[in-house]
Structures are given as structure tokens and as C-alpha cells.
Length: 241
Image (cartoon, rainbow, N blue to C red; front, side, top):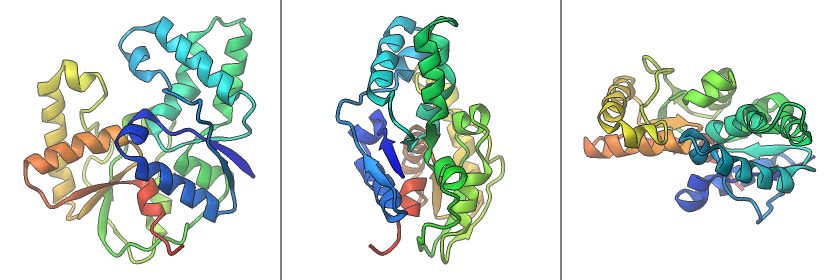
């Protein structure tokens, strides 16, 4: 099987190890991975702040790059949602671009969904003898309905102690532009989330979205908490090469 890997802006600019981990996992599972250097942003920042035409231009470029891809794998629930749910809404209902956007959306998968639903993977062979908890990112849970897939993969990690936090499905307060426009509300929501994480007894909080992890990590560091953040791809790539 061949997949096209879409690396998000935050991964590309701040957390390249997540992209590397995603590739390691897929290659270990026998998947041929393609990385097209023409890829850019999914357009979500423009879309969420009301710049529909600018988002449309980015979407057109994405469709040009990935229009012929059999499977597109994205290590982000947020960016996957932009492609699968919101790309079609950028184009007129009877347009060829809308049809293409819908087709590409059907071929686009967040990482845990691709591993579980397409490959049928139960375990990546990872080992991590630590106590962890999991934060449901809003787009992954509410827009894509993905909840059990990442948890099944986490529980299958050898020697791991997985503990659900209270209110695991509550928003962490990041929300991209929301955290800038409503910083006080964002911080308050994040502090609630950090409290639930700490109460779980976990040493690591896992999530499928870098934006959430950045926000949570900043609040944890402000409190000088020993709890660390980790992307799901990093966890699942903890196997011997």
C-alpha cells in the first residue's frame, strides 16, 4: 500500500519529530510513504478567521498536490477535519472542485484512524513503561467522531499504564485563533484541563493534535509540573528499529 503523508504547519515548523515518527510507524507496517515537497498549509488559520478566499486558494493547491493520492495520512485531527469536512464547503455545490474536494476528503485519514480502520492494526509494537492519559482534541472527537481508535492503540503499547482523566473530552482552550482573541478564557479552560491531567496521576498526556499539546505544555511548564506532553505518533513509534 502507498500513502501520501501530509505534514501540518505546526509539525513542520516546531515538532518535526512527529512527522518522522509517523513515517517510521507507517514504514514498519509495510506502507510505502510518499512526501510531496509542494505541500503547504491546509488553510485552517485563514478559514477560521473568516478569510474564505485565502483558504480557498490554499485548498485548491492541496487538491492539486493530492488529487491523485490513494490515501492521505495526517498526524492531526484538526487538519484532517479541515480537509474532510470544510474543504468541500469552500466550493460551489455543482462545481468540479467541490466533487474533487469530497473525493479527496474520503481518502484522507487522521493517523490513528488510518492505522485502526484501514490497516486494521492493533499494535505497532511500541513499548513505554510509563503512566499516561489521553486528551481528546475537539476536531478529532466532535467533527470526525474518533475516540476509540487512539485509545485502543495506546492500550496496546507494552508496559504502559493508561489512565483516563476526568473530563477527557473537554476542550483544552486552545482553538487556534480563539486562544489569541480570548486569551483569558483560553487560559482558564487550559488550567482546568491541566488539573484533570494531574489528578489522573499520569506522567505523560497524549493527544493527536499539536495545538492542544502546545497549549497544555505551556500551562504545565508555567506551573512547573513534571507532567510531559507527547503526540500519539511519538508514543506509537517507541519500538526498536
